[in-house]
Amino acid sequence: MDLLHNLVLGLEVAFTFQNLLYALVGCMVGTLIGVLPGIGPVATIAMLLPITFHLPPTASLIMLAGIYYGAQYGGSTTSILVNLPGEASSVVTCLDGYQMARRGRAGAALSISALGSFFAGTIGTIIIVIFAEPLTRMAQKFGPADYCSLMALGLVAAVVLASGSVIKAIAMVFLGLLFGLVGTDVNTGAQRFTFDIAELSDGIDFAPIAMGLFGIAEIVVNLEKHLERRGGAISVGSLWPTREEIRRAIPAVIRGTTLGSLLGVLPGGGPTLGAFSSYTLEKRISKNPGEFGKGAVEGVAAPEAANNAAAQTSFIPMLTLGIPSNAVMALMVGAMIIQGIQPGPEVMTKKPDLFWGMIVSMWIGNLMLVVINLPMIGMWVKLLTVPYRFLAPAILLFCCIGAYSLQNSTFHVMQVAAFGVLGYVFVRLGCEGAPFLLGLVLGPQMEEYFRRAMLLSRGDPSVFIERPISLGLLITTALLLILMGLPSIKKAREEAFQEEG
Image 1 (tube, helix red, strand yellow):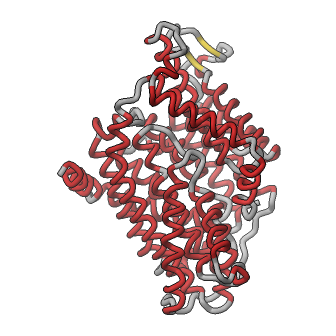
Image 2: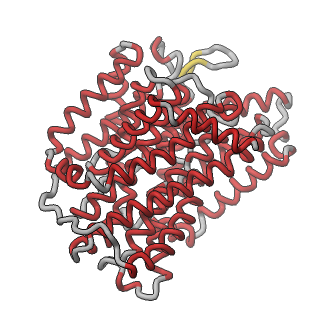
Image 3: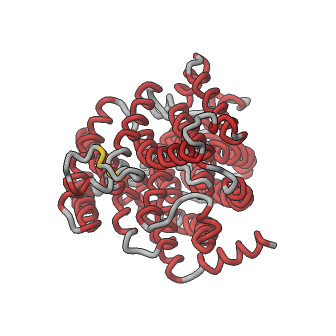
């Protein structure tokens, strides 16, 4: 009965005109940035963070969530029609989606992608509904030591599941932790690493870091690559798949949804890992692996289902435990903090309207995306003719205006520029920004819980192994650290992301 009551509350919140409007805006913007290469959901959400400060909390989070899972839909359109992925998780869709389009099956590929994504999004939302309450009740039993151990596990898991070098990922986590130390010590009131700059006394603001690290750096990298649009999109044709295509797509969608749902919950996982892993799985279990890369319908159905399922279930640790599982969820945590909301289990108990309204809006948003994507395919493809050199200055101007509007201070604009340079350096060195962002978000919270645990235990560190929950989390963390050194794990990580490279 409690679950039914909560779902009714969610429906009441989600179906208000304001929240439906912001869900639609989020889905439209998400589809747009999914279509346009060079602008991902991380950069877009980072740029929109200052705007959320002036919006109601529920509406702002619904909009940002719509952008995230909307980008997964939009990326498939151009991947199939013009072999140009707008989003990293759509790279693998190009392999078979474009080949299907060249054989005159573009419409079928698009409809299978959209309907598979809707199915996966629906299942992902149901999983959130089922597991959110038990996880929240479990989280309410956590003490400071348990939370500290949980965050340590999250940071280590983010390193294991991050693409690229493990050493670089570890370095980025530690760098994020160091940046999180800037500001005023909560216990002593002492200034730390502020260099007598008054604006840094409250720490480095999250929004300028995110905008610079992902927004500005992304622009510079894309301009450096001389990013161009490709014309000559293939005609869509009939949207109806054949019976044989449906027969082959259904089990692939189910497998992709299952795998994506599992990987989405893991720290460091997400749509990209889900898409590549599901494609690898389909290729390995297929009776005709030689068809992959030549227009296999499973090569479209499974990755598209996986990336949408992963996008949905990645909200579970963020909403229930306050632990972001990837860079976008770290930005969502930042949006909550900007709104004065403490992420974690208290969100469900103290703000049930926000919690359940956001969950119900995810299903509504997925339904909106099916309606938006299929009829408007022509318009989205025409947007690819806009040269990136015109988009880049507009994005840059938007970043600067957004940063200035936070506190009407030019210092935030300078911060955006500084972190834009740092983000570009990260790209040139082959370092991923997501572990840095996770370290920055989790670092201050981890420090707070560690010091609180030590105060309650009067300086006795054995409190971390005396509590069963904390001990279990630390053992899991230690196992992950050991596994990181095994050659088989290194090989698996490389294979999961080899297509992305």
